[in-house]
Image (cartoon, rainbow, N blue to C red; front, side, top):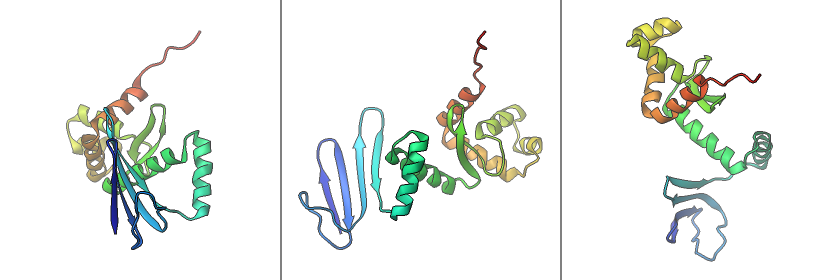
Amino acid sequence: MFASFSNHETQQTCRSAGKRIGRHRSPQNLDFVHSVHKNVSMSTAYVSGRVPARYERLIARQARAARTSKSDLVARYVIEKSLETEFPGISFRDSLSGREAYLTGHRVAVWEVLAVNEETKSVEKTATHFHWSRVLVTRALAYAKAFPEEIRKSREGETDTVPVAG
């Protein structure tokens, strides 16, 4: 069963385990909450789910270590896992410029594959350069094409030179 709530800023849809959820009722047995918030710069969606307590404690500990909120950490995990599923062979890691996409099992960032491909102008030559199969290069380039702004920021963050203090 779905129930919708809305005001001028938020659209929210809730699904319960066969129970009606009203505006003033507690959403007991809630399986899923989806909410879309629109602001000037971007639209975000609120997705909520339940996890066993031991995993909540793990997430809380990881959030503290990362100096972020549980909500932001879980959002990052959901986004990155969704992208890893959509783009097999792509994973994410911390870098100087923040989180960056790289090829799973390799130390090479997606922006580095793109840079070599821009120079060689060939998937085959890029694959030869890295001693990889063409499929790895193709996967990196597909991700780079889907997220050009993210790749540009990663590349700039990693290639900008910082003056030496002295």
